[in-house]
Length: 150
Ligand code: SF4
Ligand code: SF4
Image (tube, rainbow, N blue to C red):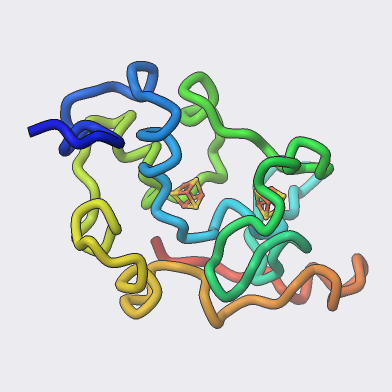
């Protein structure tokens, strides 16, 4: 049965290109991992994750506090169906990557569980484990490199 806002289990029936804007936005699990500061080794081009979150990250919800204006933020990358598989730094748990690879969503995803909290209580988000980039000097960012398990 179709919902008025989105088709039931749309992620199993549609590819990313076919999703409505509402479905696209709902697909995000709100883990917050894509909004962490990343460092790139100039020689190897390897990307390192840190536990430092973008200034605009609302750490209570793990969501962007200025989502509609994020295009003005330097280094903020807008995901779309064309770049999801090209962004090597997206975590393997990212819902968009999972769907692009023909996989289902995890049990803690709000579209499966019906809860927006389980992702946090299960440890799948960055909640409670990061600090804002406002609190870290550029020269200290390397001290914040960590390996996120996803
Ligand atoms: S501007 Fe918003 S969407 Fe972009 S990286 Fe920062 S918190 Fe994330
Ligand atoms: S990593 Fe993917 S699923 Fe998680 S918040 Fe970012 S876009 Fe959404």
